[in-house]
Image (cartoon, rainbow, N blue to C red; front, side, top):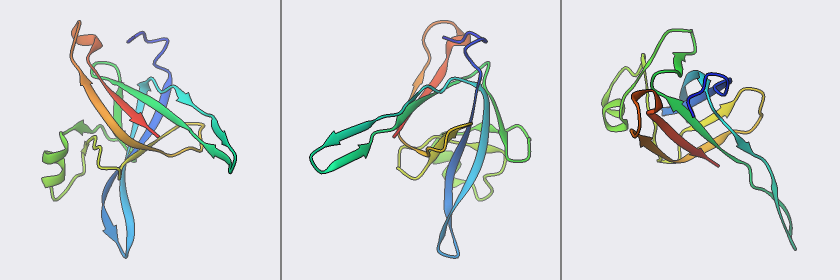
Length: 134
């Protein structure tokens, strides 16, 4: 899967950091050299049409680049460690709490993260995160 020709996507991840003046506040991380196929569609029923957009995000350890909104490199921390930090600058995380989301470049759809898994099988260059958004 980690073929450089396939890793052409850019995705923005938004980690929920709390509320400021009664508004949700997010920290942005920009991923380049990742893979993010989107499923866009609709469910038709008697009461109308409901969007069923979704997608997956594949973040490879050795290939994907993560930077903050200013272009500075950032590192992954597991959610409990990230959440315990007072200053989260320089770090990103994945959470299935329903508060974080990602957006693929060129798409208007915000995909809320509802699950993710860590894959550490095969050679080291294949290790990655699989993130599911709806």
